Image (cartoon, rainbow, N blue to C red; front, side, top):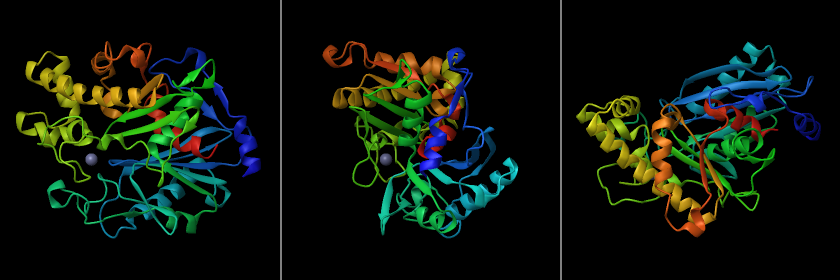
Length: 347
Ligand SMILES: [Zn+2]
């Protein structure tokens, strides 16, 4: 690993000076560096790529495995690593490390991570949630360690935070920020937190599951975790069809496009979603004294011009001693933050 770390310290960045919200940086390892696999596990899809001196390559994605036995997801990942490696022209045995950036929460069994993820494991919230399994956990780290020599698994909020601090929007003068967070607003809602330059992990690596905080008395929204009316249950991408499908908004894109085009009913719903999400961000800022939060995830990213000002307005003017100068910004790595989050874990 020492040699690998040495190689990866020399990761080259290009295009940073011209980077904007749509052009992401090219990140590659030093020429000749041993390849690593990057695995991004979300509630909707699993994406795998391989990074080496030629860049991040062999990207392959599939819907997250949710059927059969609870080892299905790990089997899918091992298969996708094989396919991604083949696409990149790398033999799986050449992989120096596998970085896994995954939705959580994690539970530890014999010290190894299993997922108790609300959007994957149907046994958590029960049949009402509609997932096609009754898993209480999905196996992850044990099968991967049986297949690969070096494996690092982290909460995807932490992976994305590390990537944003190294290559994205959470830097000052090219250095990682000390007091910051990354928030994803996607299928679920996830957070990575950094205070005093230290990334917060907690007892099981679950620090940052702020999507399961309560900031509203609303009780019409079942979260995959079993809570009713927590943040994720109210605003996550998969909450939109469950809450508003009967009103004609069968997914988050349909709702947000309607709001953007002036649909008053959709606009009122989006304002309410942003009030919930904005309160969440405010709570993080005042609890941890953060300087900047970068925001990504498919729900936010594709509609950031509409959503960002609404989120910012939930901080503005509240408790100035803690919120003055605090910045909410779009993720510097954009839609690539998941891939780079996994890479940041093994570099
Ligand atoms: Zn929840």
